[in-house]
Length: 497
Image (cartoon, rainbow, N blue to C red; front, top):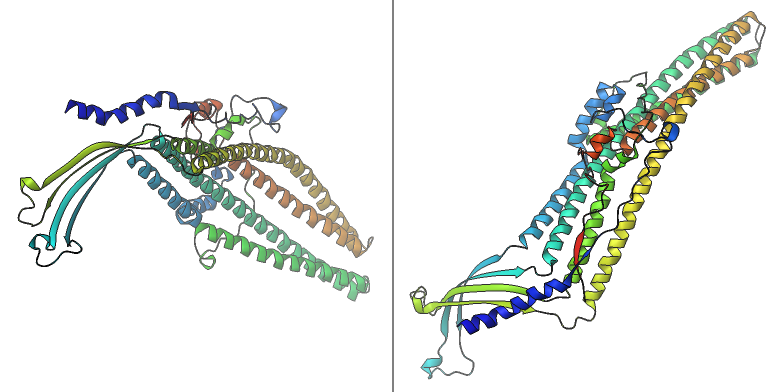
């Protein structure tokens, strides 16, 4: 008996000994580290502190209606619902990979009636017979080479990547809502400007007609005044259509029909939030898209381990017990009991190179995921640099444009007085009015670009900036990369030697 047990356990002992020389470590490449600071930061110096921004970063724009729209966005946005379903699917796959490490138990029952071919009815011993079976089978694959644990690690990384994708989709939807809402408010302000301009042009047309009827002004002055008025009215109609489209876009973001949303007009733009003078580059660690790409690298390297584990034998422990009888009355009697117990060791000898090709494919996929991760980091750096530069230079541009508007308005006031006095032609009035309208419209556009740049900057740093100490301490936000300054987690794969 002891000899039989020893023979049974010999394959298991041999497999355990083989693991000592078969498993090595392969670490994913070290993640890209951003520079200590951004070029767009003041003086190009690294920052040790920064202004704290609340989690609801859009509240910096001080608009209660925008705050309410953001709350509705999280509930109704269909893209968020789709991403949430993807997270649930990835979680189910992860749970399935965990259950693969546990033993499997199955039960079965069957009833058959059979006859031996070629038998005759005169041979009573070969009559058709009944067979009743009731069995229970348990099996457990021993994870000697880490195939199942690697699959679990890869599924866990994929689940985390899906959660990061959800955070990234939410962040993008929130930023898009802010940008669309700010564009709508800009359209409101421009419509208000055009309404004031139309009123002023109407007064100018009335004045010019009176002067023409009095023989003071020429017919061309009246035609110029009419042209200016109709052009402003046409611009107002076009801008009204653009505002309607922006309102429809907001409705779709909220997950409601465009006809069911009506936003009240506001003629003023929100103040432009002040960007900190120094912005630490380490804030990129909190971006959910970077975290998702990093987790996909880990999942890809885990697949290398899964592929390489197929080069080694599979060891399965199995046990079964059951009852078999020709009649139901005798099924539960002691002579009907049968059982089996023992390990099974299987090794593929020839597969036409499929395992080697699968390993090569997994390695190539890991290289691809690594390059994609690095590209995401580079793109993130570019986005922050772009919007830092925009926020800085648009602030100066807005100041100059404001001064240009003041000059244009003063020139218009003087020209109107000169026209009433009859010292200049109406063409001078048209030029002055056009310059004033263009200057104020340009100022509104610059302010809208300022707001957009700050909004995109907040999105680029995952919606907030915080003291560096909080980031280094691993304060987690949606899709955060806690501890991402260190290399990616090592993944154990199998050496084919």
